[in-house]
Length: 409
Image (tube, rainbow, N blue to C red; front, side, top):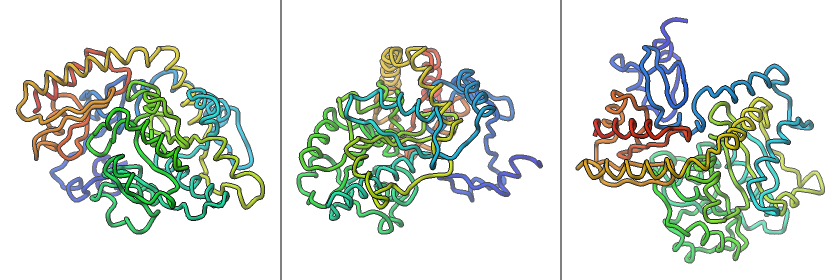
């Protein structure tokens, strides 16, 4: 291969990226070549703390031996087999482990796919098809929240409330009504609504904005009352990010659909899962016309399942969730001190180990580039600097990251 940067600029196309700026001769992309724990290393040997968990995926640190060994062992045993008409033990084991986290008679069925968008797509199609098969054909509309983000495939994009990403596709997908808050639900016609979709506890792409406490429980009560499905997008919030294994557990809410991806494999290989209830599942039984004709070539990929099982085992072995309160409280104190000492920080928004640092207008991208020089990698969402490290981060590493932000701001 020629110079990797030259090859990148000649042939690669990056997500959410202004390619004209990326390919400018003056721009030298950061080439990441190695990871260890919460640290990433570039092609020049420089070391950076992964303050964005590699786009919100990494859980236990990079290159964990337990996960790497599980992947290698599975790759040497069975790399892939179709899940259409066949089964394999690891998919069964993983499904059992996932549903274990929820009360009996709630989420008991698991449908595998590839990523967060497809996990949401599965829930949307299941919700609508279940209505078609139970005499509720008029229930075809969805409710989503302003500034929501649920993925980029066309169905998931229909639920996207961020105009700069989705406005041009607004009329091409599902019929979706957007609301600003739960109070707005009382003014809508619910008779044609099949489901409400929400990221529980905190919106991610909307600059890390937490929902009011109790809002999720209130939403579950409203959907139950009107026979509307509740779809929880825990692609970002799942697997300990908010302090519990799943965000919905903090308000004792069990949805009709739970969408998982990102941290499912510990942040190693693509895998997604959509959990649902037996009540939904049973509407797909009977004739062949009722079957769910949806799937992907790599559905329930054995290597992905092996990685996910290994990640869940680390949660148990290291008591990961038990260690989070100390880290969360320490981060909260560090962020409060950071804000108190900087006139350029407008607000701090935190939910577990997820934080949004709201800067004054125009400082977002500048600060993102500046913290890189201090050994911290993250991304800004407009003028909000995101800090969402792997759960394995130490108190000293949290202090290092916040100090990097302090120096940069």
